[in-house]
Length: 299
Image 1: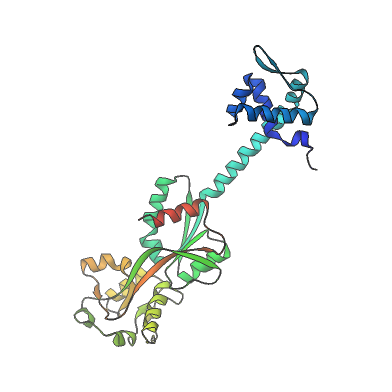
Image 2: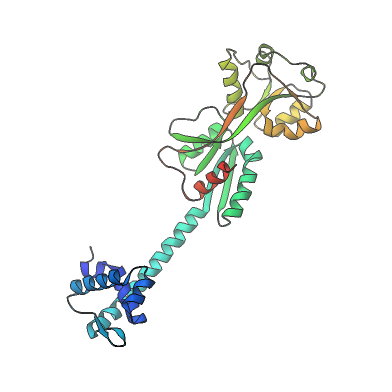
């Protein structure tokens, strides 16, 4: 049932207990973050609601009247219970905000998130992240379904129901084995578009971005030579001479640096792309998700 006015204002009742403890309205007000006039006003309002004086000012400070002592004795366990409730809610809030469910496409999960999560731990060591990786379509479905607080995708578009923000830039590159014919000559866009490649599965952001770039230049994509759900497996297949692949520059930086894979330029084709953070429309990231966003956006 609704509480009557004379007991609903727990702040004023708690202030009364502080006056009894400290012996001064001014000191009690400072303990509650308010001025002496504001504290006095609250006490007077409480006295009006109770219907009797609760304080008596004397040469040695302010003391509770007999009725004030009685009210204080009744109020103390109530106020202490309210403090315990507030502490329990704060703990619940902290625990809820400390758990962060992340879904990320493979490129982001393998090559960017480790650094972001290390920085997040330095800034907010109480946050406990859980990461699920997969293709961009899977990430979007997890965020839409509520199983991830924040997602990271590499596809050129995001599904309806999601908002997004660019957190990084990336470039797709064509790679081959050192003994592949393209390792020593630059193929045309027409030749690349007509060649079956080793590629990720349908729903992969890398595959969608490459196909979108070809489509924007007027080319249709032929069926792949091999579909693989793992970037590592694609690199191994290409290195073994199975064919060519288009992958993130982040994913092949190590291999191209040592020469186990060769980066092949493709004239006229723009393969730069945005890596996006995604979240449910109308629900801006808060708490730990907002903290991770801040880390990802920090140059």
